[in-house]
Structure formats: C-alpha cells, structure tokens
Amino acid sequence: MAASNDNFFEKVYEVARLIPYGRVTSYGAIAKYLGAARSARMVGWAMNASHNQDVPAHRVVNRTGLLTGKHHFEGTNLMQQLLENEGVKVKNNQIQNFETLFWDPAKELL
Image (tube, rainbow, N blue to C red; front, top):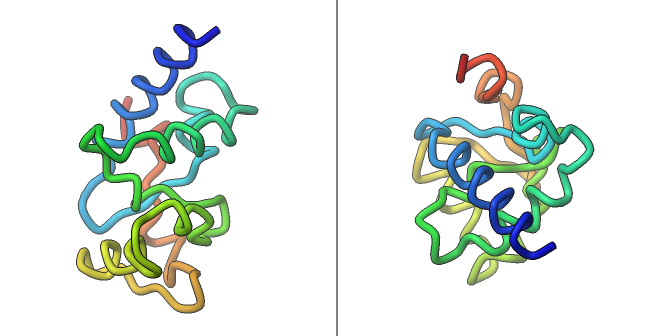
C-alpha cells in the first residue's frame, strides 16, 4: 500500500508544482485531475507530507477557498503570508476573489 501512496503523492506534487504564482487550486481539483475524484483527503495528506519536496503547498486550499491546511505550516500564519507575498488577499482564513484566482488543472493542463 505504501508504494501506491508514494506514487500518488508524487503525482500530486507534479500537479502542485505547476500551479502558477499568485493562483490557487483545491485538494479536490487535483484529485479529480488525477482521476481520483474522491481522494481530496489523500491530496491533503500529500500536501502535509510535502514540506521537503519543493512543492507550493500553500497554493492548495479547500473547495471554498479556506486555508484548511494552515495548521500544518510552521508559525501561525505562514500559509497566509506566503499567499499574500504572491498578491493573494486572505481575510479570516478565506481567499478573496477565489473564483478569479482558482486554477483548475483539468482545464489548464490539457
């Protein structure tokens, strides 16, 4: 089982590395793109395990634009700070203009 998880995580990282600067996507959008639509939680686990993988995990949020993974980053507001450094506005852990900033790998990676 671990081998298949590692392979899935690597595929998640490959997609996450393609998220453009200043844009965000969701755990579910990555899962759907990888043909595993019900595996959004697994994408979240992959993001949590990605800290030494050179993956922009801060650009992956939940389907409504909430920073649900922020407690996995060092410091209290690192995820928000990384997003704001890219020009993404965050208010009350919620990405502002989420629909405009949303990057859908299914549409962008044809």
